[in-house]
Length: 242
Image 1 (cartoon, helix red, strand yellow):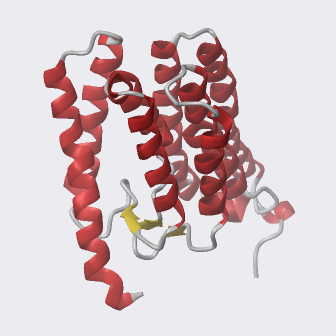
Image 2: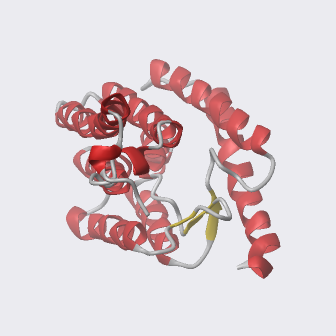
């Protein structure tokens, strides 16, 4: 049976609560991101998005290291994580796309598709297939979508952006699977190392924004393209196990 809170040493409980506070700090990042979006300061908004990604990429490792589920069973870290992730990965990036005028009218009708499909994606019982290392559906990386819309796609017109938004919204609820980047079933070095290299390139592009060198844009697209292709391949390979 699970240990009660009173049976857990005080220091261990403190460490567990600090991990939860670390995860919850993503809500403060969300507020600062919103402030930058409404100020039309997209570069700063993207920097806050990167900080949100860094928190999300590390809080799970910390939670497992400090055995948070056992030492602080009365707080559900997964719930905190899902709320913060929805804010930082879906709601605010879509808000940026709408506020910047990158979607055609009626803007909020089109925004409803990613906002609602991602809610269904987050709420699905198999949203994160931890055993296989997969997300079910497009994993609501709308922050990445917002970035590429800002530096690239919006130049092709609002309806190109709309097609991308609607296609990814549909993928959010379809039973297709994408690799969990920091816990892939295979090729950990590629997925993790590639993600780190990709993030470094993106941060350099954020520094250059809004005048991004096209060569860096091409380089930045290589990892996402490989990620999608290998996700589909590994999903196909593992279907027999599910």
